Length: 263
Image 1 (tube, rainbow, N blue to C red):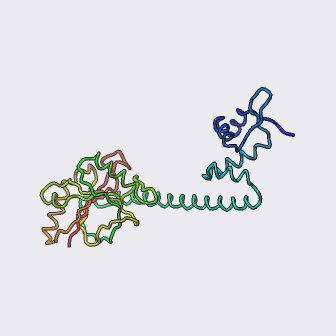
Image 2: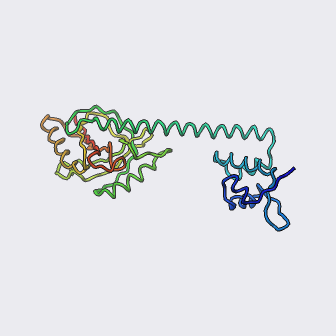
Image 3: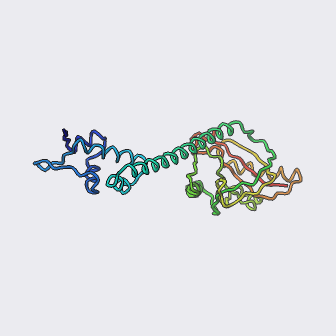
């Protein structure tokens, strides 16, 4: 024996709006009966349809796909649907695994940054580093923020800003040699699928904490160190953001690394 429900009761039962139920009716997926007073009424037999819609919507199926299944459901079509659901779930699992790995990496990055030697110039042997890059000169923080926003949209997956030490800028080496140490040529984000490459080789490195404008203090130190040790200054000159404003509002916690290629 059927039990009848008003549209508001169904909406409350499934935690959806009455507008959504009317939308399902417009699509012809779930068409209620009409009471003598003209009100929409739903039968207990209609609930299976709402269950199917809810489950498939949670997996991202379109209303067109859901309608096609409901109108043509059979054992074979249900088995086919189960396979599609498994495929969707597997993709979600892979995405979540990737997100988890990304979070672990970024957490480790922050921990590493807190242990970096500050103010000490060291030599590093760096491998080739693929990157996405936007070649555009800039000087202000606002200009950099806009360029970084463009950068994080590169590639098939979203690039994350918080705790990501793979982002940085190219400092104009010619300007730096003339004492203008915060004239930037480009921004980049390191990524294995990047279409550009930062060359391998020996790099002078120095890290500092605090306001990134200290770059104008530390770049001359790198250049002087290279000259004092009879090194050839090749470039590029890089500014990498280990911890920046996206990770902490406390300026004293922010960490920047400068790298200068030499031989």
